[in-house]
Length: 120
Image (cartoon, rainbow, N blue to C red; front, side, top):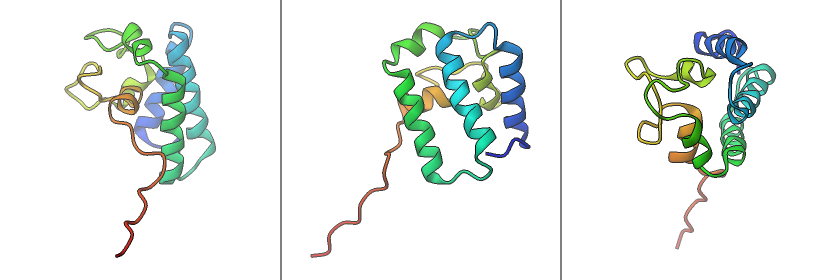
């Protein structure tokens, strides 16, 4: 992913500012995202799907996310993934799956494209 976009810049800035205070799970997720941002200039669908699969694997049980975020005023102000929240939404949660960690849990994407139906 390009590091020149505003959201990407905000993500990296927020991560740098909050690195010392983020819970270990968010640090792990942010490290995966940072690696993608720094290593892949133009991510393709397969890259995005791999990122989502890795985030899902790291999160494991959604309770781990529930324990650290997902309520109004908690973490989104400092969480690097909050850089991607739409304006007007001060927090993300299971009910408002607006940030990447919640999106990959609540709206998982298939890891492979659907196969073509057999012609009969």
